[in-house]
Length: 123
Image (cartoon, rainbow, N blue to C red; front, top):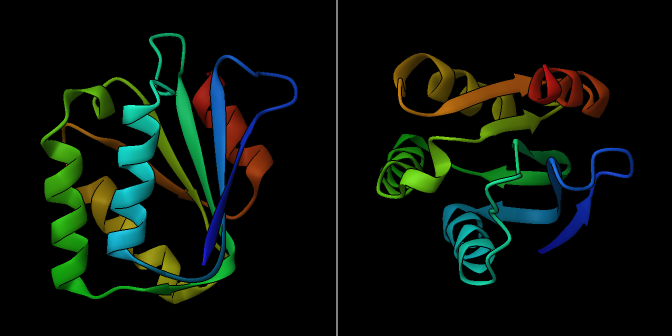
């Protein structure tokens, strides 16, 4: 598994994109968030992060989903940014949908395209 980070070409200070490749589990997702926090990449100018899961196989169940939500809720830096999840498989879509419904402090939303995710973050 690898995660490639890039700034959005048009909104480089406002949007960070994480492209996931291969199998991805909750530990790798949390390590990735830790990397972004430790490297001070979650700045005050950042409006949102696009998590692109279209090229990965998400290895997650309800317990690992709860672990991820617990991690995100422990860090206030996630309350001020939008977390867009671009996915093309039903198995991947269910978790950001649950996050959008169950986590009132977090702004999580699933999308089928990066362009739609960008529009949601910028508006």
